[in-house]
Image 1 (cartoon, rainbow, N blue to C red):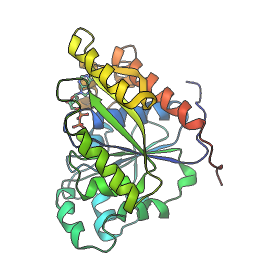
Image 2: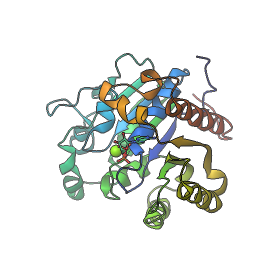
Image 3: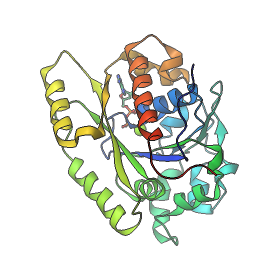
Length: 272
Ligand code: ADP
Ligand code: MG
């Protein structure tokens, strides 16, 4: 596949929405794979104790594997826990193990508890990466705060169904709070509409509502509901390798292309 333009420097993107099941992990993994297939060097940070992103990328995350937990809680270097995703050149993953479930509590008593991930990324050689995608758990706790402090961009997947916008206000307020107190660089850069069912009027109403609210932040690509998308992770594959011709694969490829081309226009500085 042809290479897409590299961003001027590594883009750190947090994929967040405190609702579960809206497509955060699916979006993280498939955007990461699509970017990597087009020559971008990508690191996925799995920040969900469920470890679904690690599973989908076929990366070891049994209990005894060194993981993002030790990075956050024991100051282990990020470089020492990162693994290559098998059969996916350019794609790395910092896995999550189940002990990350305790981190939400353990972090509370640590120094600089909101910026543990930021510190770990700063110590990592970012010149070797074009993208870092952080997959958040379904909450607005300290793990998600760490992801927001470490990133410059927030990508919000929104599922096209009835309660889609409920709770979004809380997420936006949290982004504002993090920007005001912890990370002035943070902005919501991207909204992605997921699990779109074109046969229902409700889905198109939700999509219209999201577009009228967020305007250009919303990618023009809609991710359709597609059974191929939901099957791919159990084979440790992205949907693009699992079934390249499927509607879900083509949509995630288009969404990743949009994301890459938007970021390439970024005005700030250059690498090195
Ligand atoms: P989250 O990380 O926000 O909890 P997931 O990415 O795990 O959400 O998605 C929730 C469920 O929906 C998963 O079982 C996933 O396979 C499925 N899913 C996600 N996107 C799609 C899609 N476009 N079409 C069909 N199923 C999807
Ligand atoms: Mg998830």
